[in-house]
Image 1: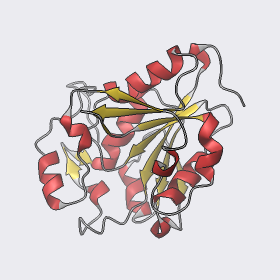
Image 2: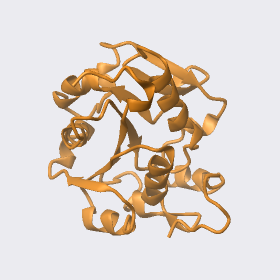
Image 3: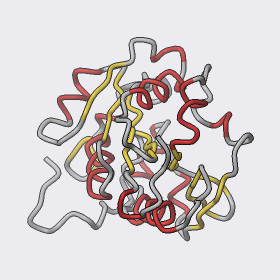
Length: 216
């Protein structure tokens, strides 16, 4: 299906990669507490509040616990039994789970709950308002690419052919990539090690949460 010419009709889905084994952390990092809820729940809330639809979570290690941490949220799930073979296996499963009317997808990492809502919203705005927009839109700080990344339907087929642990990174040299600058060094934080988690605990919770709301 071709991308819609009408900005209003451009549909942006989301994939949340939540299949890894957290070897460097020594425990399931996506279930670690952050401001009263598991990391993975905050990521799902960000994707949902940004307006992505549908939002598909790709599980692997600790699948039942991850899915339980997301109880009550309007999400789709697909399980990756081959998660140990690399992130690309999760990307492929996520892409294959998307509906045919998805014009683009934003790929979120399950260990980045601190990504501000304005980041995916800005990527979606550029994709919808510019015709055509670049097939890959990525946030950046000081020229360094970060996540989440928006991928247009034009590259869904190459994504489905990925292999190894590089995820979607190997296609970045084959298609135009637009870096969208943000003045936020925390965009470069990946929670892989205990010291990364300690740094994460110092970052405030996303502002989309109303004082009367709870992530639980």
